Amino acid sequence: MNAAYGIVDVADDRQVGEYERHFYRAYAGLTDNKLVRLIWDWDDAGQRIRTRISYADQVIYTARDPGGRLTVAMAVNLNPAEFQAAAFGFSPPDEPGTRFCEILNVMTTPHHRETARATYGSFIQGFGYGDLVAQGFEVAYSTCTRRRLRPYQLLGAGVLGQASINGEERFFLRWPIRQLAS
View 1 (spheres, rainbow, N blue to C red):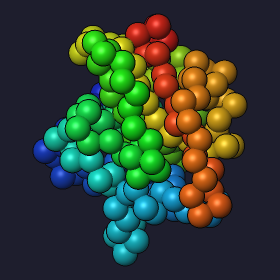
View 2 (tube, rainbow, N blue to C red):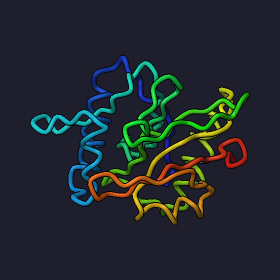
View 3 (cartoon, rainbow, N blue to C red):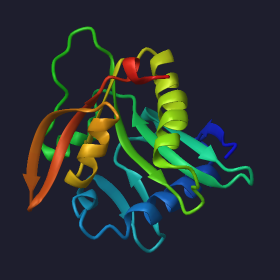
């Protein structure tokens, strides 16, 4: 796939709407993942989701297929004062001098055709992490379910903590993006 990489212009309602509708489709059917209802703003009638982190404090990386259709997106919180993982009881560790960000979500759309490994290598490591490192970020934090834990560890994430909320497990991860960026 010859993907075109970009960033959502959060001032463009059309781009934001497209992203929020795909975000909804990616997560609405995950019946085993109820905690996402606590951390994101859901508009079921409009079939849209947005995180509670202001778009002014985010960068949303995108990949599009040759036809211009959105295939992958990764939203990242750039503001350390807001922290989505706090909803699960996690806080960033004290790492003086380390600039960090927070991965809010990664999603694929029905138009995605690459393998997960290829997408991770080119889009996430190359484009997303590359841009974050160029902005001076060294570490990214995120959370995940048990189902995603082992694959994320194989991609370089380290586990910092674990919580169980209403019977659902969440893991707090540290991604050394400066080392992982390709």
